[in-house]
Length: 294
Image (cartoon, rainbow, N blue to C red):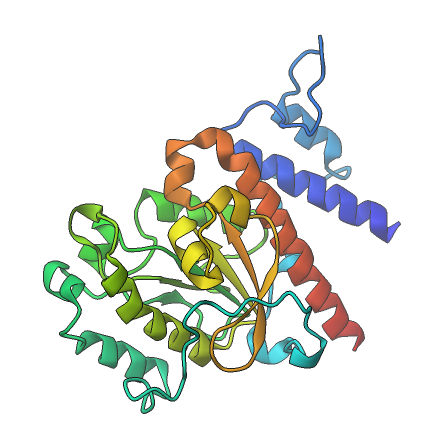
């Protein structure tokens, strides 16, 4: 019975998310030939338990993570042998970062990073948003125009889409931690230079070390390539968990997915993003179940 309820919750969540994303016909793994389109609102009504109202707002409440101190940290000794150590592994004791022991110090240090050209062309430092005690850390690529103006990550149209995406699995900004690979907007939204990313990547790694997330979600090809140390595109990098050492000797499960800005330009790819969200939901739910039984 529990398995049936889990399957039903997953189905409801999947359909509700597709409906919220503006898709009005069900996306199936195997297309039905010569069959009438499946209306999502009808499927939602059929899938919901009797008497359940407001189905389009349904989320998987059991998947919502608690702060990291309520979740068991992974044991590095039991991590998979396919762990990723990004090229040019960051040394937490490097001279530039040795004295940084808090997020406030990290933000202050970045604000004084005058050697980075991006600082001098951006309007604001875009440091982070959300809950630093969350077990899920979401890392995007770079601030856009709205983020640069407000100094907060993911506040533009792509941020609104991200809010809907994480809401579909029972999360919100109070239950995740958000940041970007780059804390400043590149002028004209250009791609950062190799020198700029080389300068800022150690700061991102220190950011991860200080937050100590249970899981990391990378959004976009730029973040995925740098963290995974790969030349592959996001379509090859997404959809699979990898264990990554961010320089502190802890192997953290990391999942890459499509950036919301890309999904706004290519709405047909939202299905892939939702597949990634299901992977994330299952992993979060499994950790919570183990924590409760342990």
